[in-house]
Image (cartoon, rainbow, N blue to C red):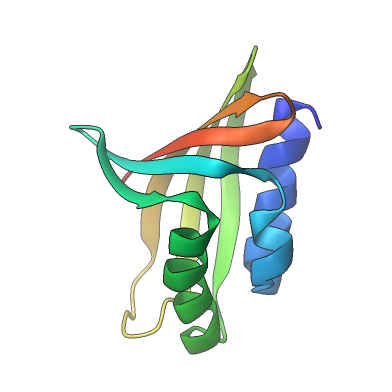
Length: 112
C-alpha cells in the first residue's frame, strides 16, 4: 500500500468499527505514541486490539471525519474530527501522523 492508502484503510476500518480490518494496515510491531513527548501508549497488534477493540465495542456512533490530509514521502498527516466516543458528548479534534514503511504503518503519533 502507498502511505495514503494505508492511512485511508485504517480510517475506513475505524469508522466501520472493524478491529480486524483496522489492524491490517499496521505493522505487527507498530508503535503508537502521544505528542508532545513521544510517549508510547501501544506496541503491536495485541495492545492495539485491547485499546481499540474496547472503544469500538463501546462507541456505537463512533466516527472520524477527515478534515485535511497531507502526504509527504512515507508520512501522512491527518487532521481529524472525532465524534461518538462513549462517555463523551463533545467532538475531539486530533492530528495523527503515520509513518509507513514497506506498505504498513510502522509508527503513529497522535496530538490531541
